[in-house]
Length: 105
Image (cartoon, rainbow, N blue to C red):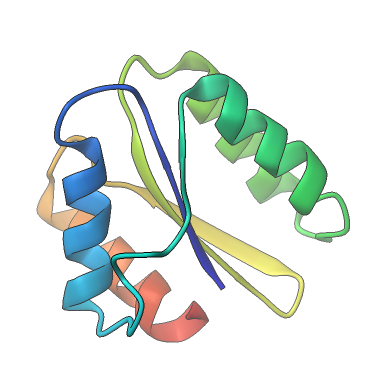
């Protein structure tokens, strides 16, 4: 499963949607993207409570809590999660997001 989290910044949703489209996700326009720190952290606390990868969850929570801008792609599969932040538009982040989408969608 692929989920997105974004800040209230302009353009953040577009970064996530383009990554989903690039990755061949069929419903890339309707995938859920949670807006703002509070909504993102609430989703993480509620929906990921049974995930065994606690280090990755804590890392994601810390990043979203402290970031001034974020556009995160989160992949969840078989109790494991991986995430990438696209807000800095680095080639590494784009590649990470592409791999997450390919392997965990």
